Length: 246
Image (cartoon, rainbow, N blue to C red; front, side, top):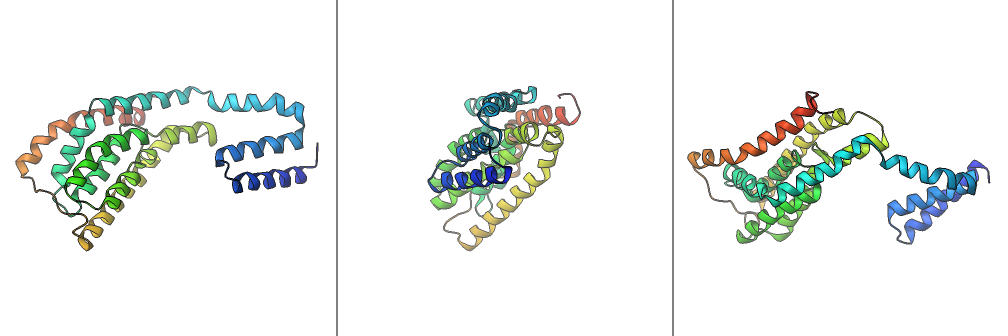
């Protein structure tokens, strides 16, 4: 065993070496931490505690929500609810400059309220939105960038698997409060992204053309398609906020 200061210096040096040589950040942090523990506490303590710490970090009742949210996201993706959601949102926002990209952003945000999976959100919306934007001759960089960024909204808007991991394994805070705290920032970010796309489309109209303008009756026609989305949102978020679900 060595002095704490020496152990910290060794740990930081090894972390820098790992990062410079291209080792993934998560693996670099893990190896540097294990080496620091080895030098500071000794091999016996490392052998006794490393496994327990790793086990305790991934065992928790709250973490059961993660596979459930992933399952829900995959069910939504499989049963094409994203198609109906996209069609309904597009009828309301498609007539704007960059309307397809704006609709994609809004759909990703709404999908984030239903599933905590970034992958499910990006795959569901991207499978519908990208072909539509290609048909309308959208700039490919704008189309891919919109989906790549908007797909990450599911990590901020509850229910979010990232928030579950943060609340249970990192900070030990109430997941419900963390979820509710992510609603307003998620909505603000969605609005800012939509405004950016609108301004970009006004400056470069050839890269993000307008879509067809739907009549008011057509907009009303698609509203029944959004009922399952509303029911699911109220069930998940409303149930947690009202204390029906722990």
